[in-house]
Image (cartoon, rainbow, N blue to C red; front, side):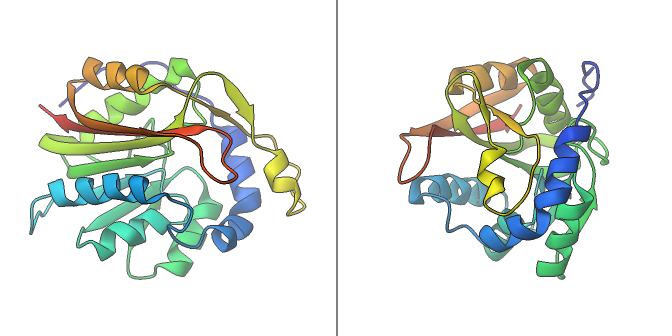
Length: 221
């Protein structure tokens, strides 16, 4: 699917922040223990929607250190990970040498049209302001083949949070903000690029979380 995309978003600050914290991030989030069972149930539903033996595979877009790539691979998916931060990709390759990872932006994916049967955006939209969301979803729709599935996870709500203080315990002075979105906003963005909502999950914050969380599963028409 060929879709026009808006102007580029400047992610230089986000890249610098994640390059700085990459090693500590990999140590603090080594796997999916941070996810609630409801979160993983949605990831499982996404993995099950990918046809067995599918040669197009799954793109983990904004893969970070590769922990969700590992989870999907263990579910039987053939996964390709891509992330903006070379530092995060270095950790992903170190910890998952059997999986494929590349450096690239979710707003300019280095893959041809109709390449994947599934695209995962697991908290990959949260550092992009509202004006840049349409470009992310247009790129996801472009690389999805017809009938493919997209899964989006994000903090639910409105407004911006400064997440830099969370990294000060590791001695990092960075600048990093995250944007919260409502499920209805995300579903509207998906519909605008030809993706149909299959289901959604919205849950309340738990333990030390500060925000509610949402996951949307959609299908390419």
